[in-house]
Image (cartoon, rainbow, N blue to C red):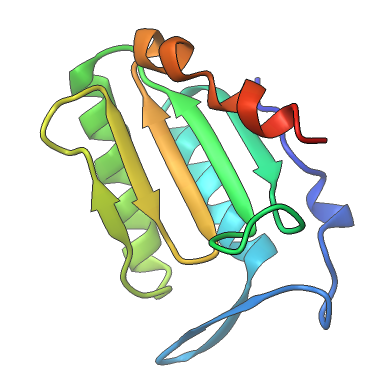
Length: 133
């Protein structure tokens, strides 16, 4: 089960950051939908998205998800990156592919954290970011 914003209530045009790419502009809500759907399709667990627009200068949303093992983490990462590339949304920065149990994907407006469960529990980013509400 995924916990996230209701995309129907996502910021509307004029109140939403826009990511520029060669072929046009994309609303953050559309980018977020690609990420969340990709994570669900890849069987990532405990998917959470957090709106950090008012609390952060580096991103508008943070998405967290768990993978069952290092192998599953690599597969989820690969699936998400392929879907992102196929959507034409441009380059992303990726850290943590070396096998540490935590992969960070920076799309510019959305930061995605993919964890093995024990690493996610150790850092507990949900508690840090949700406590600020």
